[in-house]
Image (cartoon, rainbow, N blue to C red; front, side):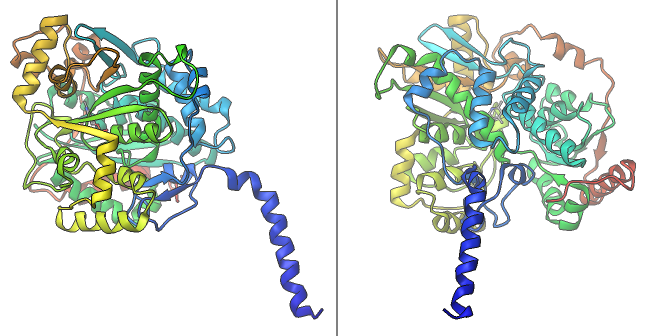
Length: 512
Ligand SMILES: *Cc1c(COP(=O)(O)O)cnc(C)c1O
């Protein structure tokens, strides 16, 4: 044989050897973009990213399934143990060893006000409510946010680096992010909220944080107007790289990941699966108040993993998702309607891109076409096969402000139990579609009513405020006002640079 033919063989041999050596690595969970242009990222890099470089969203390349036997073996686990089990399906041991993962999740959930961080409450008319609002800021975002920021801090410390989190908020995301990072040492956070457009409690949950690493801005404008300078800052690659600038909204895969646990917990609590055997599992219906569709995306993943869930996505009068389910019309209307449930006043349920990808059989090219059209024109008619699939994984409903009030009042009259206006959107569905004998249903409670006093009072009801809310009134506040006439982008950029300087010239910020 000539050298010429020998060489490739040698190369082949070496490659083969490498493949064998790398086997454990290639087996590990990898992530790809919903738009087909990015593959093979690991959890670490996905955690530090927002959108994928091709404009898509990150999803696991392969979705593990949960067998009936595994589900039954999880029946006696606590919520935090379920979070650990779920996370370890998607975060390889090499990145976070199981023991460390358990410590991180424990410490994330240690500041919740009920023993197991979440609680299932059973009320009259077969209404079960999964309370997910026992974190510091009294909204469900605390659960995924505290875990996600623990993962961040873990990697930053390991790499001896820092990051600056930049968040625009319409209410709950900002306060949840602040309270999750204010005692972490490797991150600073800059939050911008729309002044006068969020509740008093929401505002004070942000402005009363006077820790050195917390920077709060009150802008004279809407959430959409705040988005503009933020998007410009994130598009500045040099700024992003220099300061390790990152977002923490539900574009971040890690938040979706942790939310998978909510649905498995609900299933285990209500299905009675422990008393069954064989492969046929009882079903459970979960009703989810939906805005950016992060939570419902986690539900779809759980269903995809083999857990028989019937999902109901409930929206207020901002009903893009409901129209998509009803008729395949995924398009935005001219403007956002302000409703009694402000955290879901969202016209672009952006996480649906992940659901479309999942339902299309991971067809990145199709999703890219669809979503680019939606971005350009704000309208999209779902392809028929995709629409059919969507209807097969979820039902939907849209509730007016009157409906929200009606559900709050009825739930109070029957149970002396108060729900927040978002939770009421789901509870409305329950009252209008009673469960039949033998069916199991739970409504997800996304926030505490104590956060939405204005609505509670409007319903003619009162509430005993938790101490944490009462104390907000007397606490010192610190924030900076961004006037309408100011250049917001410039003001925020200056603050980011000032943080960089304060953290010393030599500080290493996270670079992807
Ligand atoms: C964020 C939020 C929602 C919507 O959650 P998504 O995952 O974006 O659909 C619902 N209710 C409350 C109280 C929230 O803060």
